[in-house]
Image 1 (cartoon, one colour):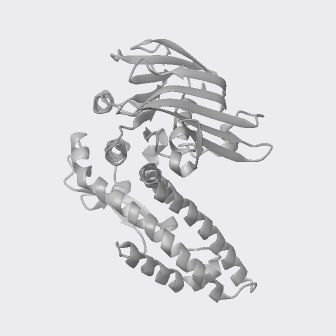
Image 2 (cartoon, one colour):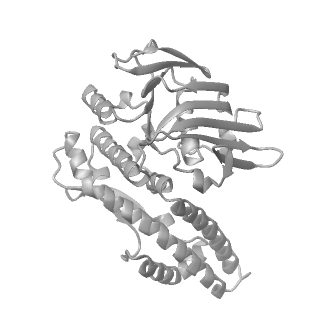
Image 3 (tube, helix red, strand yellow):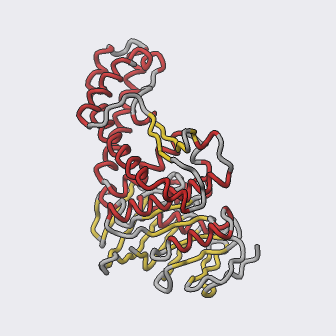
Length: 375
């Protein structure tokens, strides 16, 4: 899939901006930090995920003092079909987000993944040593693009989890009896089992090709696996639901004491095991970069297979994090995809690239192949 045009209205530091992206498959947005380069990629992520890939709240996406933002894009599928996507988020007169496909309003779950995207962000380099929530977000973001049911399940899970935690507080203060937790345990286990099965499937698929990707990028490791850490061992959804129900009941006293649910997919984690060791415990920053690149390539392949469409590749300041050899590897690996990327430094001639100069919320097409922005 390719994004043909992008229109922003009152989004971040853009009052109004329209881009024609038909001139090339590689678009480089060049400029100094703070000018709005990353905001353009963030806008594309809103069309793809219905939310910011950077995790920004809706109030942060609206231009300061404005009541709404609009992001609209036209995309062409690999089969040549044109689709128009639009997300509008308003703060007044009441908070509301509306999603449209070909000008027909639809649910967020049905829009997500219509424009598949695979993304590299500088903060991804902290993926292996950062918080477990970021690792869960990484795989859930991929799953939501290929499984609308998983998107809905994650929303439902958070809703039920919030209600169970509120009930735990009532039980702890004597305002409710412990038996009131049973139906919430069952519902949380039912939804949680579906989420866990989807995550395990993705991890298993990545493991089929992970070591090959790492070796292709120059690492001489012998074995590499993503290890999904959780309470329990079941993999069948029905058996997993029973197991989660039992675990919630087993940990109920502790949950009441802490007034928080301590088991379930919201507490799960994963790590990258290299030759029997957790990558986070030994890898250099360079090795972490290689591992993140391998995951990016696997994500791209997974999205293409599951969606039947080549994703749009969003690369935020990736060149500053890679040596020349790996820069070339990235561009070569994605030569059949549309790439939207940001950079601050002068780039060598890149055949076929369209370079845009970005400065203080203004975007100007500058030239093909080389940026005029000083390092």
